[in-house]
Length: 448
Image (cartoon, rainbow, N blue to C red):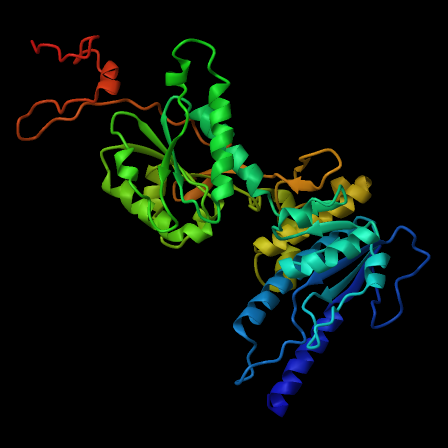
C-alpha cells in the first residue's frame, strides 16, 4: 500500500478507535480508554462490552480499497454500533449511567484476539461477536465469568444453549416455523395445504413445520371422518432450484395453500414457484413463505397481492407510532439515514438488556420494534427471541395481518370446454361440492 493510502487507512482506524470507546451517564459524557476511566464510585453504571467485526488490522488491496468481505463486515459492524450508541444514549437520558466499550472481533495479523479476559470480566453484558468462529472463541470466556451474553446473529445450538445467561436476539426461525404452522392450521385447516420441501439448508425447518402442522390437524380428529376434513399436509418434493411436480398437486376445485419455509438459499426455487403459480391462473392460491421472500428482488408485487402472500416478519419499525419520532430523529441526526435491520436489532437488544436491569426506566425509553418476546425452550436454558408478527401483502405493501379484513371464503366453480360447451368432468373427490350437477353417487345429473 502506498504512503498516502497507508496514512488514510491509519487515520480512519484511529478515528474509529476513538468512536469505539465512549460512555454515557446522567447526561454527562464519560471518557473512555483514551482518557480518565468511568467514575468507579458509580456502582450502578451499566457496563457493556460490544464485540464487532471492524477488521481494523485488515490491509487494503492494490488501489487502496479493502477486500470486499472486509468492507461489508465493517459496514455491518458500523450499523450495529450506531444502534448501540442510540440505545446507550436513551438509557443515559433515562437516568442509567452507561459505559460502552467496543472492540474488534477480527483477530490481528498474528491471529491474536483483540479482546481480553479482563475486558469481559469488567462487563455486565457482552454483546456479540457476530461471526460464528469468533462466537465459538468468546463463548467459554463469557461463561467463565458468568456474564450475560447477547447474540445478534443466528448461531449453532451449541453456542446458544449454554444456560439462562444467553440471549439469542435474532428472532428464532424455529419459532417462526411454529408460528406459521399454527396459523395455517387455524385459518386453512379444511383447504388443500401443500408444503414445498427443498431438502436443502432449511430441511430442519421444513420438517419442523410439517410436524407442527400435522400435530395441530390431528388434535381436531374427534369424530369419524375428521381425518378427511382436517387432512395432513401434502408435501411436494422440490429442490433449491425447482418446484418439482407442484402442478400435479394443484386443483382448481379447492383453495390451494402453498407453504415454503425455505429462505435465501432457495431463491431459484422461489422464482420457479412464482412462475408456476402464475401459469396456473385457473386455480385459487394463498401463499405463505419464509421472511426472506420479502427482500427477493424478482418478487412481483401484483402477484403477491393476488395470492394473499403472507410472511412472518421481525424487525419492522412501527413507523406510525408517534412516540418514536424523537428517537428516529436522533438516529437520522447521528447517521443521516433511517435505521436498517442491523441497527434496529442492536438498538433494541441493548435497550432491552438495560431495561431488564433497571425496570424503573421502562416508560422512559422507546424500542424501535415490537417489544422483544423471550422464551426459554427448556428450564434453565438460553432465552430465544420469538417476536414474530404475520404480515400480508396488501395494496403493494406488507401490512400486519391483524389489521386486515378476513379473507373471503373460497367458492368452487365448474369449468366448461369451449369447444363442446359441456362441463369439464370434476374429479370424484370434489363432486360433492356441486350437488346441482352431480348426484350423491357421483353420477352426472340429467340436464333439464
